[in-house]
Length: 92
Image 1 (cartoon, one colour):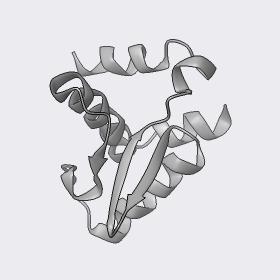
Image 2 (cartoon, one colour):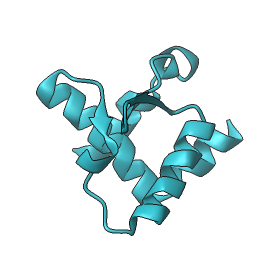
Image 3 (cartoon, rainbow, N blue to C red):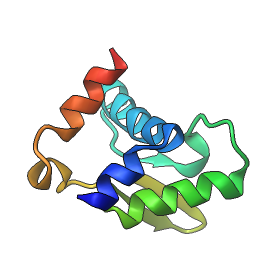
């Protein structure tokens, strides 16, 4: 739980989660390429934030050729019921 809360305590990482949720709801797709995110930091800093979310098991990464796709961990709702819904409410 400690890793989960620490990882969600940063506005950039929270933005990544919100963008993944919104993208899935708008487009029906669960995956976004790393370049598909809207962020205001340099690429290395963004990669660091992604690494933290992956290590906390909040998001997963799939590689296809040279592209990396990010998506919410499919087990997140099972292990942390209500977490995604709570994050969604902060978007409203």
